[in-house]
Amino acid sequence: MISKTINLLLVDDDSVDRRLVVKALSRFSHIVKFNIETAGTLSEAMELLSSGSYDVVLLDLTLPDSSGIDTVQEANTADSDVPIVVLTGLSDERMALHAIEKGATDYLVKGKFSDDGLMRTIRYAIERKRPEQKLKNAAKEWRTTFDSITDFISIVDKDFKITRVNRALSDAFGVRPQELIGKRCHTVYKCAGPHSTDCPHLQTLKTRKASSVEFYEERLGIYLEVTTSPIIDENGQITGSVHIAKDITERRQAEEERKEQARLKSEFVATVSHEIRTPLSIFKNIVSNALAGVMGQLSSKLRENLEMANRTINRLTRIVSDFLDISKIEAGKMELFRTQFDIQSAITDSVNSLAPLADEKGIELKSYMSGCELLIDADRDRIEQSLINLISNAIKFAPEGGHVNVRAEVLDGQVTVEVEDNGSGIERNDLDKIFDRFVQLDKPVGPGEHGTGLGLSIAKEVVELHGGKIEVESEPGQGTTFTIFLPLINQYSCLAALSNGDQPQKDEAVQEKESTRSGKIGLNFRW
Image (cartoon, rainbow, N blue to C red; front, top):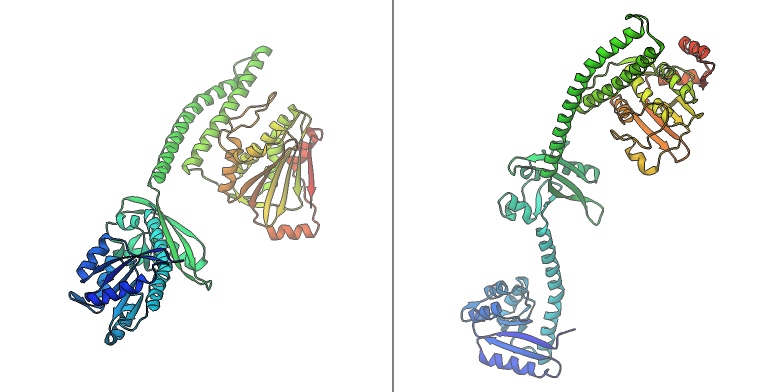
């Protein structure tokens, strides 16, 4: 709907033509009010355009100080948002058409238009300009928003050429935005070349998915994280990607500080642990010699106190060992001495070593083995350490008279070892932090050791160093199951043995343990 008031600028050096236009428009005063200002030269028109606000301009192409296409172009530079209707003579009609190509909205031939035709041309010129103005406003708003983003943004086509950048990016490199247009993205960001597998733009073009890379930008002296997201056209074809570069310097510095703090802490823990281990070894030797009778006969009371001291020394030794292991893991210095062995033998040794602890709480401790050898390539001592940590944890949280079951199986070409107890279980919110260091959920009361909160963390780290993983499942009141997954070396021969129904042989050490413990440990085999 056209406005009830139209601000019109009439630019024509012929006073007669001006009066004819004013008279023609006065006929429509009952419909619309025209506020008409006139100018006889282009310079006058430019001054009025720069200081006023007009809805439409009627512009003669032949003026004392300008003529032809230059007249339209000059007027457009003053205010490109105002529609221009060109007024031309009969011989200038071709030029008028050319003027439309250069930015004019419409044209009228002097002496050949009616009053209604003039009114209709003005109305259409204003209406046609409105959608164009909306698009310009939207583009301006988009550009303002684009330039207000503090992250560095660029649009890159399939040929790795930059087609658009925001102000933050050009300002960072101290250049005008136009100077970056047409450059290849890897000449702006020195993170990777176009053929490098690290190039996120290349990965996005290949996968049609977002990709990212972090690197140090030497010219800016900051760390950047560049993320590329695909641009898909209406035909579903990828035409390039949007690059968003974030300054992550503070985050990287914080990470480095945390690493340094962790390193210093690890060094401190390792130093203190080594210093404690030496006197502990001396005390251990003295107590062991005394208990062995090297220092003479002991009274029952003295023997009882020495045995208590011996247990305390053993516990402190294990705590020191845990601290040393954590320090090695944090420093990436834990060495693995790999050999090939049947993990079931490690399970048997671990279960047998913890049988007295289970007996103390009246807990039934059983192991269930597979029907074949389960060979793994691993550091046996470290694997047993992980198993003992998991099983002792299960014993700790199982109720008196409860049970702990350890199962070894083959699943999808992997060894799985489940350690399951019927304890109180773990709240769902606590599952995510169960492997965190120094975390002890619901510390048990009564007999047994209260650990450091490092056992599960060490078990997880050790298993992951072997290319495996540990998962935990638990429901409050339903007990807890920890499952170790490790690569199996002999999966094909094992599967063949299971399919043939081969019976496993019990280890002699296991049979001896069974006979001396009144069946407290049950070795059950599944195939």
